[in-house]
Image (cartoon, rainbow, N blue to C red; front, side, top):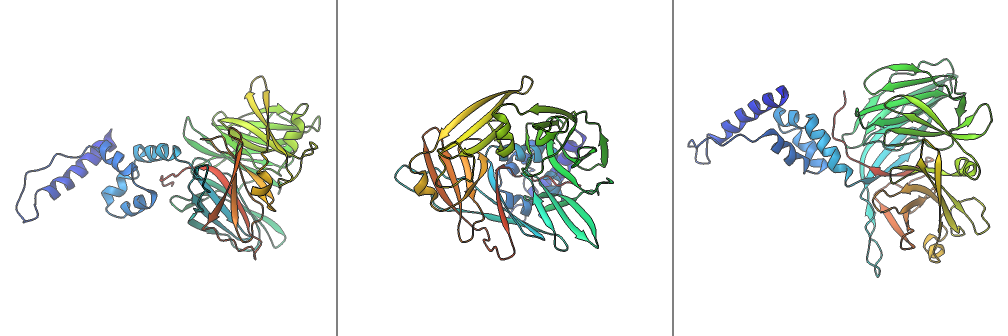
Length: 408
């Protein structure tokens, strides 16, 4: 309330000053002050680039655009129009792009190309390995590992593509060199957290954005399964692991708010899905998706693929899963052609299964398979640098939202 009153006084002062003089230089009647909530609503309707410009207009506007009421409202509105985020990763640089979701053409027309907008470049000193996680409520977690003078050096950072802000995180103090770091968000307390664990599962630490590392207790004997990315859904961070006692695959659920761990055992046919499948967000629930050929063999996604299988976690407490099978349409072979694909995820608004080109060279395509109407559409992506001369890898993520909050 105090912040809003101060803002109203400042805004009233400036508004009254502007309203005292008309175009011909004579005084005019004083206009009524504009309420702060109206100003916030007006700003929330502006596009991202306009917000950046408005921050530079005056200190008053800059203070308005820092208000939690505004940043929260902008994020809420942005969540209703999720975008695609594209990450081009090399050995020492990360480029982040975004684009709108794919248009849905009429039956007799093909979709036009989608043009991506470049947001930022993040450079790391020296040759190393960069890994980029899925975007979490507008922020992206980045890890850079390099060997310097025989020592392994790890750098962790949080990027905001919307504001181009980069936050370098404190160094993880662990005696063991090999660690895995994951990024999650608590929508209740609105806190971002980084979970870090040694690959043998012996030590766990957590960092709340803006704070320092804290040790965690974990009663689940498990160690790292680092080949596939984790996913955060509704305040729960899911990652694959291996049970130390039984040597079987499992999924570990980390509640970002309570900082508690829960195991999900992979039993029966689910074991194969945990081993080879991609974790996806299916309508706010955890999903595991795999691709099979006509013999039921799990393999690469290409024109010879026959069907997708999707397991959905229906009840976490009871560990109950449902299974769905999506047979690919006859047009699949012609649309995919010679491309080799990988899963991107499941679109939140349409339930389309989205795939992308694997190691694209000349053209980069996204593929949308709609199980409801049994169609597959190929969309060309433009605006993303396709030069792979320096071993670049291109990744695409769903449901990216614009966050205009500036973090200390």
